[in-house]
Image (cartoon, rainbow, N blue to C red; front, side, top):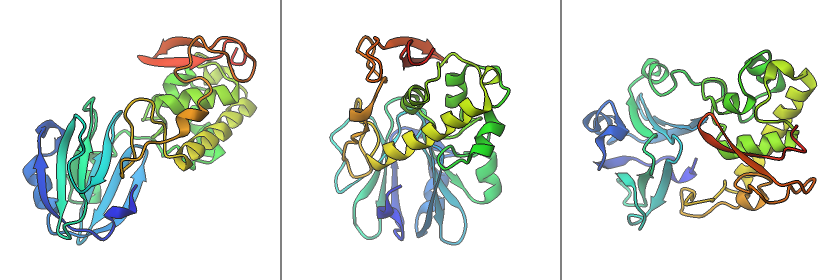
Length: 258
């Protein structure tokens, strides 16, 4: 989350698509205006901005949500919310092409946990092996589906599930209940490796993703399987296959990930 928000005070809110605001644009505006942003936290794809006095301004990125800080409105489609600040510095623009994200005003911890944090599993980034095993061991669902299930692990996206599974040598259709503890621990380690590497490289700009300052990520240059269907696997040379799992495009090597 951008440190460019810390210590700033919202003064205006413009909402172009009311369904992306909870409970209402009026409630969000009343909650954040005139309150300094004191602390920044993240849980999975949920950004939590602790405001002075009390309350949390929550921003859920969903599948395609982006927070952009800029002096003027970005020349891109699907910018639905604009927040101005009393220092007249860069505005915050919320862009979400697929509209699964949202902003919410949570006046207290209880409303945060009952609202944006409801049904979210523990944050995947930094999760230790013991907790990872607790969340996955013995489950009968498809491994790829479970990695994407935000109720199981919060914050694993489609790209990073595919890339982690390839690094761990596990088939996306395999089931945790059929895997050894060693295999699951190996997946945990490669998931952490993948997430941290992606974070260090600013994410993956495979279509239109940019960071809060409009800069594209570079992790897409390190992709081994994602969106590389038909191309040779970088590990063995076999053609990478594409299937659909949990409604999401899934890429894997049938030789390395039997």
